[in-house]
Image 1: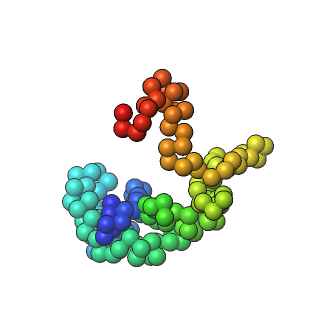
Image 2: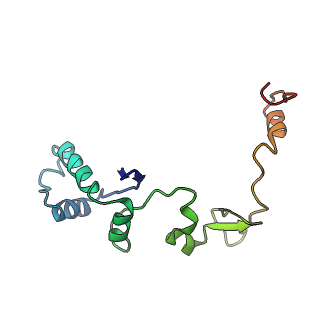
Image 3: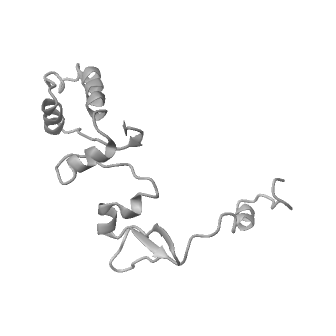
Length: 139
């Protein structure tokens, strides 16, 4: 779903959460479990979601039991509180990038260096794939 153009992932799939969410917004949930009202309730959910921006929903639902998360762009992800708390991003030589996952206690991973410059390994990759390396760009 998008919230004023910024995506998020509401997942009120559990009956109790969906019922409570819709009820809190003046919608009768009866018949939903059987599935015959899902099209109607899906439309109602979209109407409710459109009432607030993504960031307003984040502020409202943060710290609750709601299954909800903003979909973050690469520029937002390193500063997101959950990612900061888990140390998911690292800075190497001034470049912020995702850290290695999964993390193992016996064999911890580490970032070897900054990401390569775009195109730095093109010839090597093409050779590995069995494709001829062009003499000049565009061939």
